[in-house]
Amino acid sequence: MKKEKRFGGLLMNCGELVRKIRCSKKMTLQKVAKNVISPSTLAKFERGESNLSVESFLKVLQNLHISLHQFGFFYENEQIKKSEEFWHRFKEHTLKGEQLQFLNDSQNKRGFKYQLKTAYSPNRSEADVMYFNEYFFEVDVWSLDELRLLAFKADLLNIQSLEHCRSVLEEQILADTYDGAYLVEVYEVLLSLYSELLVNKKHFKPRREVYEYIQELDMKYLWYQHWLSLLLLLNDSICEKQMLGLKTTVESFLCSPFQKIPYCVKKALTDLGFSY
Image (cartoon, rainbow, N blue to C red; front, side):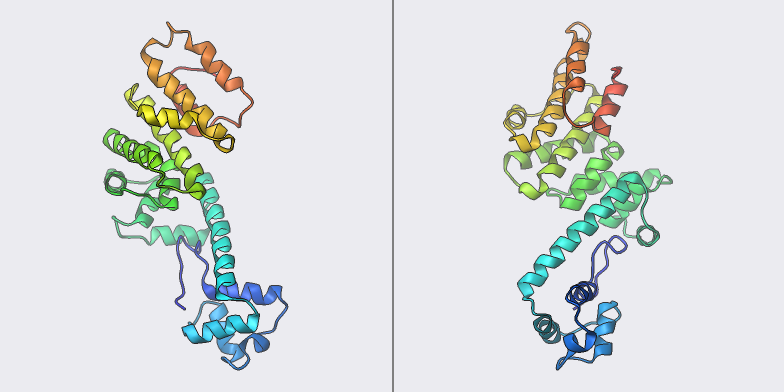
């Protein structure tokens, strides 16, 4: 089993999870390693210092009394926890030392880790921002991590990239490209893209089918329907907002019993001259 590291420890290696399962079952190294490998070899594997053959790994799982399918389930859940912690720290600008070091070591300007480094670093150069734009201009279907990065850092995109990303995402929403596990991130990205377009262009044209799709979101996504509808309302009437008396309408949105205003929406409202 190959030791894996991503985002400075975001991805757990298999040995680390084996140790966690073993300890939760209160089993000794000797018992889990019995008739397979030596206890010291298992200890090194758990610490990520050595690898096991596939055959030995499967026998270790047998000694742990769990199936490969069960191990995969545990592994996936551990990854979700680590990923959520990473993105929370990323958003709050409180990455751990090893995570920061991992980003700082990234040199591939076309790779995703470099885009993370660009987004996180206050010392990013114009060239870094250019690579960031090119990366998202070239990707057609985004992973969960790419969606999260787009949601947090849409403000780094230029107008061309914003239009491209918005168009691609609208197409993918209508085609049901992303399953339920991704939809929260998809709508967060859409909020961010619409907000940035509203501020930078003052007017843009989302597809009517997308607006209708948003209006039909089930209750689970009502918060996103609420804020996306507000941004679309502002977009449709931005040049006539005073004449149409939008101040009252916007205030009614802001006073509704929904979750707090997303940062991207708050920024857009402030830039457009609304107070709340």
